[in-house]
Image (cartoon, rainbow, N blue to C red; front, top):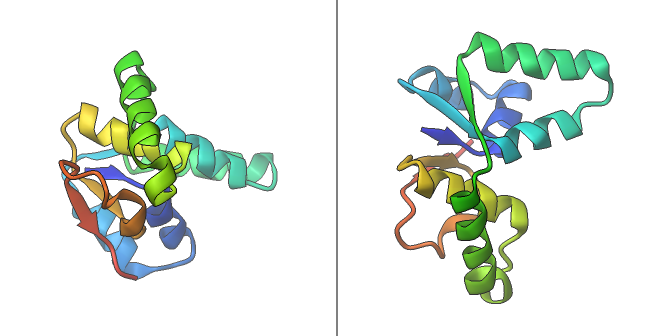
Length: 125
């Protein structure tokens, strides 16, 4: 399962349901976009280290931005940017899920619902 940034933020805030969702996943993946967003939200080097250690401890696999993911994300922006307000970060996360055949766990379903073939696990805190 590919986890969207919001799930990991819920865990940082102490949400037990989000932690259980991650704990029950057989395999844990994040897009490089999500990893960058988590690091960008850190206030200092210590928080960077905490994020990186958390990812290691829970055996998250960070999926890279590939040419195919970049192309698919561009198509999503062209198709859904004007009609649904899709942003580049969400397009990259969705494209990462699609290109890797993974279900996307997110609490931000409205960001991803326009993509018909995207398999979503909707999280409700």
